[in-house]
Image 1 (tube, rainbow, N blue to C red):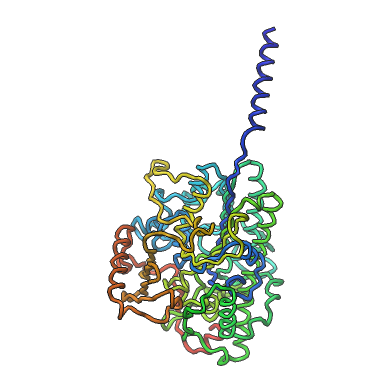
Image 2 (image 1 turned 180 degrees about the vertical axis):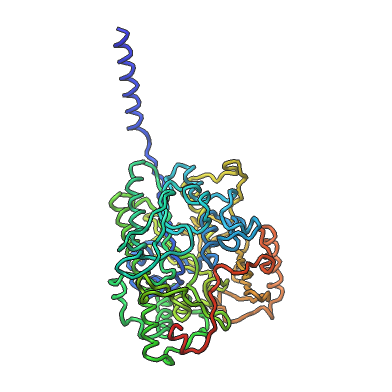
Length: 552
C-alpha cells in the first residue's frame, strides 16, 4: 500500500512537471545578430554606392534602415572596445591598441569594470555566440569565453590569413581558437566561409535551448592580406580598368541617386597623393586592377555569407523575430604618411593567393571612403564613418534612410533595451562603468531622425582627436595640435576649415574635449607613445608616382 502511494506521488510529480514544461511561456524576446567587417570603406557596398555585388546586404537595406552618419573609432582594437562594452575605448582599457602602455586606460585588454554585451545579455537569459575576430585582449583570461560568450570560434589577434598552406600558395598556418581550444584552418578552407559555418553550427545547437540568442559575427575581410577565392575574383576581371578617379565619380553619382549622399553637401577633394590613372603604364594599371579585383572579391564573399546567415534564420523560423545590424570597424586603410609608404611585410605568392600579404592601398582606399576625407587611423570622416544597416521585420520601416548620427557606444544600450536586459551597477565584485551611449531604438523605429544624446561625441587615438556636436566638428591630426572646424551640414567632405572665423565655437568644443579627456583617462600621446606604434603604416621611402604604381 505504501509502495502504491509513493508511486502515485511520483507519477503526480512527473505529470505536474510535464504540464509545467508544456505550459511554460516561451521566451519571445528578439534575437540579435551583429555583423562587423574590417577595414571596409563607407561606399564599398551596393546600397552605399558601390559597384561590388552585395545583393544580400542591399536587400537588408531595402527592407530595413540605413544611417548616413554612423561613427566608429578609426582603427580595429579601440573600435571593438567601444562596440563590445558601450564605453569609450580609454574607459574600457584600450585607449591605444591591444598592447599594454602601463596605464589603466591603455592596458590593452578590456577591464572588468566595462561589461561586454555578452556578459550582460547572458545574465539576462540570452545565449551568447561569437564567430570571427576578437582583438580586445590576447591573454587567455581575456578571451571571449572568459568575457561572457557561451561559444566562440575565430582568432584572437588583429589579422589573419584567409587560406592555410595548400593549393593557393604558401603561408603560415592559420591559428584559430574554438571554445578555448587552439585549432588550425584546414588546407582548402577559406576563413570567411569558416567564420560563417561555425556561426551556423552555433545557431543549430542553440535552437534546442528555447532561449533567444545574441550572435556577433566579426569578419576580418576585407582587411589585408588580399586573399580571395578565384571564382570571386573572376567576377571583377576588367571592372576596374576605368581607374580610381572615374570609379570615385561613378560612386558619387550613385550615392546621390540613392539618397545616401546629400547633393547640397561638399564631397572631399581629390587626394593629391594619389597619382593620376592616365599617368600609369599599362603594366602598372594591370597590377592596380588586380588589387581592387581581389578586394572586391573579398567583400563579395562576405555578402554571400550574410546570405547564408539569413537563410539559416528562415530555416529555424526566426527571421521574423531577429534584428540584424551591419557595420564596419573603420574606414579603408591609406598608406602614405608624409614621404613614407606602407609596404607588405612579405609576399610569397601572387595577389589573391595564400602567399599574398598585399593590401588595397591608398589609391583605391580613396575610392572606398567616398565621399569622405582621409583614411583609417584618422579622425576625419573617411577614418571614422561607416555604413550602418539595420533590419528587423515589422519593427523597422522598409527602405528608410536617416541621418542617424550614431556611434558604436550606442549599440550596447540598444541591445539591452531591446532584450529587456538590466545593466548592473556591480558585476563579479566590480563596480561597473556607466554606459556612455544612447539607445538607437527611437531612430530605428522612426520616432527620431537622429540620436538625441544631449552631449558631443569624442575621439582620441594616438594623438588624433575630434569632437562632434550638432553640425559642428573639430578635428586635429597628430603631431599637430591645431583644431580644424567644419560645418558638416554643408561640408561633410571637410573641404572648408572655418576655425579662423569661428574661434568661439572652436574654444567651446575644445573645452568640452579636455573635460571629457580628463574624465575618460586620456593622456597626451607624446607621454605614452611606444617605440614601435601599433596600427601605424610600415614606412619605406616613397620615390616616384611610377614606383607607387608598380607597388614597389
